Amino acid sequence: MAKQKDKEEHHAAGTRAPWGLAGQGAGAGPGPKMKRKPYEREMRVLHGELVAMQEWVKASGAKICIVFEGRDTAGKGGTIKRITERVSPREFHVVALSAPTEREKSQMYTQRYIPHLPAAGEVVIFDRSWYNRAGVERVMGFCTPEEYEEFFRSVPEFERMLVRSGIKLLKYWFSITDKEQYMRFLGRIHDPLKQWKLSPMDLESRRRWEDYTKAKEVMLERSHIPEARWWVVHAVDKKRARLNFIDHLLKQFPYAEIPKPPIELPQREHHEHYSRQAVPAEMLVPEVY
Image 1 (tube, helix red, strand yellow):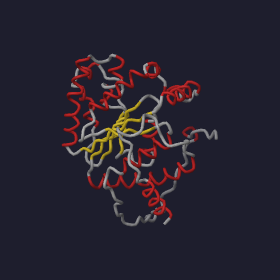
Image 2: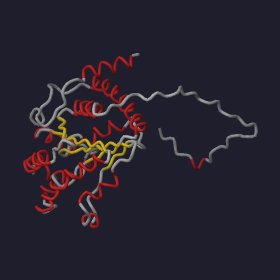
Image 3: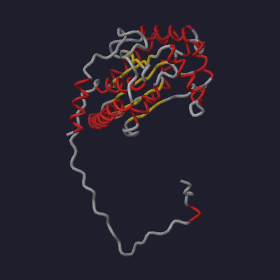
């Protein structure tokens, strides 16, 4: 009963309109940052809904592709972690491709992403995607002006093809302010456990903030199509961003809880001639703690 009440309260509170391209300015958001206890309470409810959605995806054969884009430190990885921590990796797949090989550079640009697209009953999450060409490749000069223009000619048709094949394609941009990115970079620089997140490319993106802003604005304008529109997530407050994202994601699907038969734990079988053998001492992991 308590779980159902939490679910009803969550949906009642979640009727606000989603933030879209015509919403508030980049990085704008509601007041003070969210406290941990209400965040964890809401996240617990949303995790239950994600599990219900997962069962619906399996039963219905839905094919879902979610594209995560945004600046370095915008909170994409943390949000993906919260999505996947309570669901099965057999249904939810995270794709984070490394830099293309020489062979991949010679292929059709979107070719290396195609093998990772979802089959029936799967959700694929791209932690960065084919939109690298419109962002980092454009700003850092990794593609030619001709390749850049060809991308914008091709990507709407590529995405329409995905949608016609039955894939539900959702594209999200995580938006933060200049000041917030600066603070998050400092946090990574001074935290030894986070320094691995920093690369020379990340640091260069900080210097080229305005170039990335211009590239983002062009990208949103030229690839925002009815079949696969962009959604902007205000991500200055990481906790609110995660909740708002998951809430919005769930509302894109007509999922319902799939009825299941009661689960009964079977009685363990006992065999009179079986005895458990001791593990050799040299095979044991030392109990340091």
